[in-house]
Length: 151
Image (cartoon, rainbow, N blue to C red; front, side, top):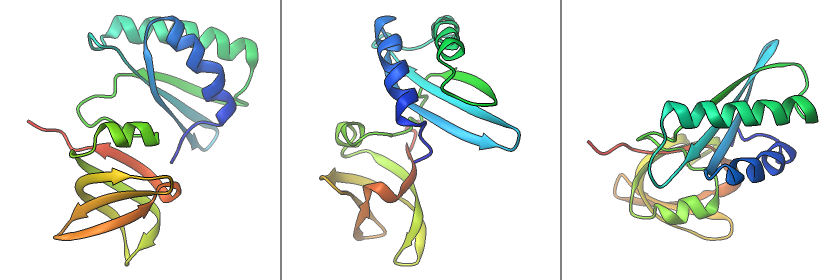
C-alpha cells in the first residue's frame, strides 16, 4: 500500500486521536520534486471542512517541528468518503461482506485488479469472492483497496 512511513504514522496517530478523530490511514505519494501526504480521518458524527482544517493545522505544526518528511510536500486532510480506503487488517475485518476494489502490486492469476465481495482476512491473506471464484490475495501485495460506494 502507498502508506506513509511508520514513523509518520506513529507520530501523527496520537495527535489526531487527541483531537477526537480516528486516523483511518495515511497515503504518501512521491510526485517528482514534491510529494503528497494525504491523511484520512473519521468521526462518529462524520467529517466536515472545519474538522479537516483543525487536523491540518495541528498536524502541520507537528510535521514542521519534527521534520520527518524531507523536501517539499503538500498536506491534504480528508474524510474517507463513500469509497473509503482500507489500510489495516482491522479495517478489512470491519468491512467483511462489503464490495471492494483491490489493486495488487503483483499479478495473481494474471491480474492485478479485483472487484468483489470481501469474505474475510487472516494473518497473511484477504479473501475475495469475484467472478464466481474465490481468491486469496496476499495482504502485503495490496497496493490500494477501497469500498465500492452504495447509492
